[in-house]
Length: 228
Image (cartoon, rainbow, N blue to C red; front, side, top):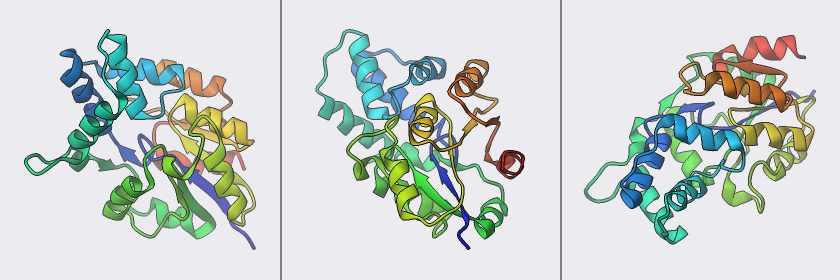
């Protein structure tokens, strides 16, 4: 008998990225403009939708300050800050795993677990291999699709290639919610209490049709049971 399928976004869902990806956005924008956006500024852009890609977000925030920088130069600086180079360790080292011990093995006993992320697939595996190897399959990254979120292409790919009963998508942005809706997949939202736009994000995710909005994935088992 096929298991249910749970597809996870990564950033803000499986991994706390405040001091990694979000800090990299801040540092990248500051490098080119001299102005450092706040975490609330970044969330405001995320809440608009269309900014699931942190390279694109950084580039647009730089342009919004009246500074013209080639996109490739923004990406190069972003990647250097995030992954590090010969002289500096990258901010990726500050990522923190959110799931408590035992959660994913319990979920995996009754569900197939997969990932659909805005990261490049190899970058996703760097973090997954560090914290939780050999649990998620398949892993679909931004380089595996033609159209990135909120387009549901990656979610549909997973759903079509994995035998399953019911499918769920778990994410923390408007673009995640829209991808779920566009794929016809029930969406469970994540809104961390520490988010500087917590109330607004909860309202946005609910408005996009989330069947539940949780503080973190450690509440996921109960949410799935209630919405089965």
